[in-house]
Image (cartoon, rainbow, N blue to C red; front, side):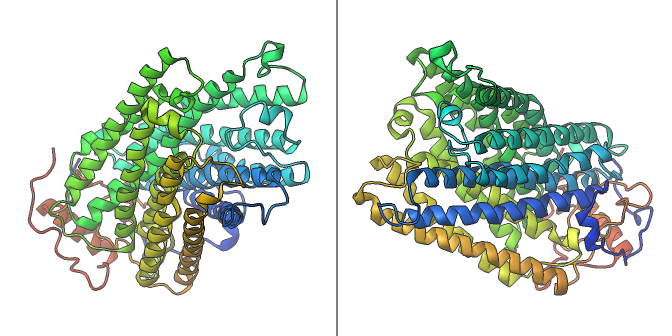
Amino acid sequence: MATITRPLPGAVPLNVPRPQFSEYLRWSVDHKIIGVQYMATALFFFIVGGALAMLVRWELLTPALDLMPDGTEYNRLFTMHATFMIFLWIIPMMAGFGNYLVPLMLGAKDMAFPWLNAFAFWLIPPAGVLFFLGYFAGQAEAGWTSYPPLSTLFSGDGQTLWALAIHLLGISSILGAINFIVTAKNMRPEGMGYFQMPLFVWAILATSIIVVMATPFLAGGLTLLILDRVAGTQFFNPAQGGDVLLWQNVFWFYSHPAVYIMVLPAFGMLSEILSVHSRKPIFGYRAIALSSMAIALVGFTVWAHHMFTSLTPALRIPFMITSMIIAVPTGIKVFSWLGTLWGGKIRFTSAMLFALGFLSMFVIGGIGGVMLAAVPFNIHVHDTYFVVSHLHFVLYGGSVFGIYAGLYHWFPKMSGRMLNERLGKIHFWLTYVGFFFTFFPQNMLGILGMPRRVAVYAPEFQTLNVIVSLAAFVLGISTFVLLINMFISIRNGRVAGANPWRALTLEWATTSPPPAHNFVGDPVPFKNPYGYGTQAAHAYLQAVEQRFGPSGVPDTDVTTLAPKAEPEQK
């Protein structure tokens, strides 16, 4: 790939108009508008799911039923909380980032299949409507895992609507994943090999492979579940020749890889953000890229560790081994990120703070995961709050912290405005402290034996539950700081310029926001998108600034690329 020592070809006007608000409310085949549609929809369901979480923690302030009339209502509450957060917040939000950024990072005009891209998004709102209709038909109450016979015999018609909605969301994910795979394969510019792609694109590619391979299994299981409920079949009824463990195997064969569907894109965001905001070349580019593919492969061998209590002893050992092996490629990423930070010129922007928060919280969640991979410990804490803590350290401390870091990093590109850094830091500290004291004490509750998914618990657990609930309310308040920041910044935020972070990947080599087809002419990518601290990188950034004018974060030394020049990475 050529090193740019001249202004990039195809200059674009600096006064690119923002899309009209109405464009985000109707059908569009522009990947940028679709990306924002994904993210806005996901944020709406995040608020709804978060409100349900606040009700859960309100109920758990005392050992007795206070807010809910009975345990059934509580079951419905946490079922829909988990469903919204997983299927309508994290997964669509990651798809939104992918839709907006992947074509820009590859220097493409759009996704490979623009119409299919739009169709995949417009399957999501009807799915959300089906979930809400469940409240009028007897909402699903079997948890997000929906184990039979709870989901076949003891739930209302809302459970059927729940399964149909998940079906729609699965189809949306599969169509989007096919689009990402073809885009990464066919839409790269001349000279950009696979090992010159940004690491976020690698992460989206690995995620898409998991989606295409795993989601059909969930669709098959949901089809059997619906048939059992509406057609009288007995696939999951042992008394009629069915097998209740069939659902567990099919569900977890999707749902454990689904953890990586939710966290791999955040891994990709972290690789981008840590390198840019520490002004350091990424440490171990190929190791990070290939570890994403390793996670996609090994992730399909660990599903049964969710079933240690129902497996025969002979089957537990192989799944214990694979569950520990899956930590290796993730550990490679963590050490590579630490190597990237080491000796860097770190700028503690809001994006960087959330990235560092991700790193610390996800490691805690990962340690909990290795503990749960050990059969004796897993059986001891099975269905306790230790599992709840581990899940949230991975998916909130990991995925959601990654989403926040990505919003602060790429919001200037999407809107043309900078988010307010003071509000961003308030948002970070409220989130970090609130999250830690919400979920870390749950480890102790789990080890002491408090079961999850119950509204009535032993009185000796109340003190820790009060701490958890108060911290959860702080965590809930933190979300509104972000929303206020976004609202204020869109209207009155400081103009960002094309490349406020002086980054080297291609999405920053066009205006903020980008024009309709991203670039005028064919963009020339820099040969090493993480080659900070080199003369070639300095020349490239000068060429970008000749085109768009200087831009940078105020009150920081944006002209110094690194503490010292380092050799380019091979």
